[in-house]
Amino acid sequence: MTRLALSASRSASRSVSLGIGRVTETALGPYQAAVVRIGFSATWLLFLLREFPHRQELYGPDGPWSWDLSQQLIADNGAFTVLMWSGSQLWFELVYVLAVLASVLLLLGWRTRTLSVVFMVGVLSLQNRSIFVGDGGDNVLHLMSLYLVFTRCGQVWSLDARRRREARARVPETAPDRVGPALWTVLGLLLVAGTAAGKLGGDWLVPTILWGMWLAQGVWWAVERRGRGGEPRMLLDIVGNLVHNAALFVIMAEACLIYATAGWYKIQGSRWQDGTAVYYPLHLDYFSPWPALSDLMSSSGTMVMLVTYGTVIVQVAFPFTLFNRRVKNVLLAVMMTEHAVIAVVLGLPFFSLAMIAADAVFLPTSFLRRLGDGAARARGRLLARLPGNGRTKPPDRRTPGEADEPAVEEQAGPPHVGFKA
Image 1 (cartoon, rainbow, N blue to C red):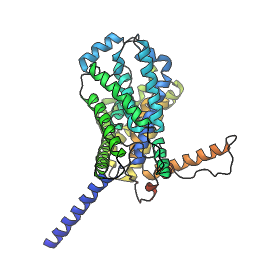
Image 2 (image 1 turned 30 degrees about the vertical axis):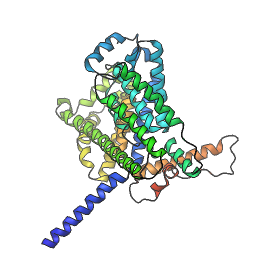
Image 3 (image 1 turned 120 degrees about the vertical axis):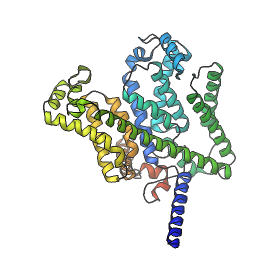
Image 4 (image 1 turned 180 degrees about the vertical axis):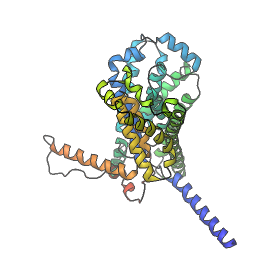
């Protein structure tokens, strides 16, 4: 009995050691982090582009929710927004364009450490300027923009990964990085100016994130400048991996919390209990961009009842299905399909895109790698057909993960790579 207990204790200790080593030595879920980055940056970019003709009414200094009213509200709630630094039209246009540019660059994965922070600033600045504009998708985007700052979301499918691969091929002839220090200097000057003017808001969270990330960038650059090895670099990698893995866990927990609370609140509603809740939004003018389609879906009482009960069951059950991969994948496909239907039938495309991007953190690694492989082949065929592009060089048939981080392909099971981005 004692021998059995000792064996079990050793086995448990070994499992704990392996688990600690895994979360400290590797940044887990590189493909999931990348697809979340792409999903939310694309969602915000599409929203900003669609609302570009209406940007004045939504966030401009002369909009219905005036700059003075917003200033009074922000003075009370301490929210962060750089739009309150000035009431001029030029400053508003500059912030809006920079938000668009940050979304594009984060989507492409260029300097993701820095651009994730700039992306967060753009999201918070515009949303906090007019908090009465938006829907539930804006709340999800608001939270995820904060979480993305702490992830290493440029491990694969990014320009950062390509730059690292090319730098490894050029070693030791690699030229010193000049863009990174320049960005760090410019952002530092802006932080100093904003802090000195007392413009960073009354809340402590965002200023702490901004200054913390800026200082961390400086420390990381100083350590790398002294060489690629050594204990300081190992310590930074461990801290970076821990922060990334914790942030990825928070993103997953946030998605589960959204579905769990939505499902349990629905259960308490009488219309959800009698199976008629879906019928009513289909007959609201605001949620009926395609009246004929809404009428078709609501014409069958059985369909309305099945969709109503099915929505509640899926939302309540999803957090519990994470313990069974097959069931989780089935419900994940159902939820993504449901959000796609909501985007079309109820006219809520950006809410649906935000939720699909949040759901993507649960997608299987094998599926994401196959998806990347298909995208790489399609890109190769497209480039081969372009005028002036000779066919002497065969298209790159490697997956984005293979091209960006060859070590990913060498591992069995879910890929995990130690990385900086």
